[in-house]
Length: 409
Image (tube, rainbow, N blue to C red; front, side, top):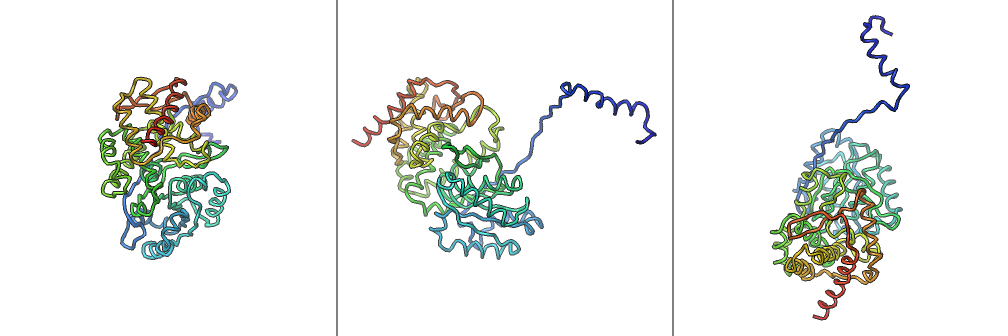
């Protein structure tokens, strides 16, 4: 002990020791925040020799990135449609980052990768075998499900590796790749296991959209409709007036819609003040309480985008039945989704009370009181905290009649 301490200093040191006999009186509260940088790039043919969108970001990390490894996971659907992709990737890294040859793995695409936890274990094992450090990159190339599952593994390895998402579908480019969510399905529930972790970089590779099946092409436009209904009435009007061009895959019309949807989701994450959903509300989840439940109930026969379209229709119809949303806006929303090619009814909706269980799961997943976004005008959103069960059942029932009418017409 330093005998030169003054008496006052010794007294100050001793005071905290005295308090340990009554520890319940000691309390410390300190709010703090962490700084993240969210990077989004729109490009085409990411691994073309002249495209520096990816290399520019990786090389900025200087010597750390050159020493660190790279693990890459490619959606099997992407690998199947781009037969030379692996060789293009290897040539790309030889040109831009020769010290960092990525270890490439092909993984199942679609919801399958999130439903089977064996896939998650194999991704974790692959990351471990690559001997990655916390300065290393994990690159996920594919649709939203692959980005979710690989992102979850990357976020828990070493408590977080640097994740690069290369989104290849309209659904991931319009919405999910912008989020800071990563996860897999468990216990029959959508995204039950997961974490919030910001990606290091998101690349929307628009060239990949041309390879999508008609069903996968359409999927992302339900999320574009959703965010337009909540935040951008002019975007909704543009979508509404171009339904048939979207359905026929007119890229001059469709690509700007995907870009605008991505930007609105991106801005929500970076500017809204609650990216990790600490508050009660999830402002962009219009139509999602039922969408997640519909996916489960259909055994994931319904894709997320298809389920969201139905969920939007249900919530818009509920708002109309409650007297909040006028008949004109309600009609335009259903017509827009229907004319783009979405089916707004699925046979599992016959079990309407089971579907209502999605409300409880939605509340449990978020925590706090039930908070669901609704609209009283296109572009004007408000939160609701209670559901009129009879009106919601009527909204679900209405969709069956609507579908029957459209089918007969």
